[in-house]
Amino acid sequence: MLYVATLLQWLAVAAAAARVEYDLEITTTMTSMDGVHERMAVVVNGKIPMPLIKAELGDVLALRIRNRLEDEATGLHSHGLFNNGTNYYDGAGMVTECGIAPGSEMTYEIPITQTGTYWVHGHHNSQYVNGLRGPLIITDPGGEPYTYDEDMVLTFEDWFPNASNMTMGSKAPMATKSAHQDQVSSSSCYDTSSMMDGEASSRDMPTSCHAKSCVSTSEHKDPDKKYPIGVINGRNGKESPTLHFEPNKTYRLRLLNIGSSFMFRFGIEGHDLHVIEVDGVATEKQKVNSVLLGVAQRVSVLVTAQPESASNYRYHFDILSDIFPDLPNYNPRSYSGPVVY
Image (cartoon, rainbow, N blue to C red; front, side, top):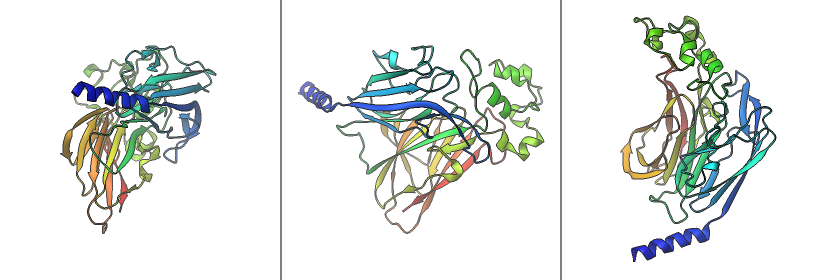
């Protein structure tokens, strides 16, 4: 009987399956995320953030990618999807594909066999660091493991004041030679060129000096020139969007760290968070006060609104890293947004 029930469920999903199509044009634009430093960004359909991509279990997700970059191949990697049997649609540049050439296009046709919270991002050069990234949400038409009234997506990013220009073959571990060397001052106590080749070690630092404490006076005066800001849903963290709650309703918040170098911590005043999913896998419900997200990590939490609407609250998210210097109000750097009843 169990086999029959499982077969019937599979047939129901197959019958409801659809081809879900997204037309995604990849190009560049100039933007000033912090309102001060204008820089190049890699964007989809001319906008930041890129469109939210949604599909259901059993669908075929068709991503038509049109490369309008001048001199770089491109592609989109669906982070967390198995692509079992379709690794040629995995979008990993120089691993499973040579990349979509400038002026060309290609359609990834991905059978959806998983549910949960994922994301897509560029896998060529520094395109992902420069903005080619966004959420991918997959739901189960047969019902989710937990019930809730509304689904909200919150993406967190670190945004550097300078564009990255890493090319294929570079050993730079993260943000890029030009951008990262701007973030880590030459006045630091170690050889940044060695670090950029992925070979930094204790021999590059005097024993009395730790990377976090080796910050010049000028950096303390104007760290905005060197260090990234926190971004939520494609907006400067100082302009965080409003979350609208209604009394007694339960909300699923999908939290995604789609940045490149920093961790994010998220919590809401006066509200418990109940973790129900980590990286696309449903979990037993676990109550926490806040969630810490590493790069590429996704966590879903359930939040039940207060029974009364007499008060409003604030959510908070911090951006932090142990590979950048400790600077007051910058590492960690705190932001908040309103929760309005």
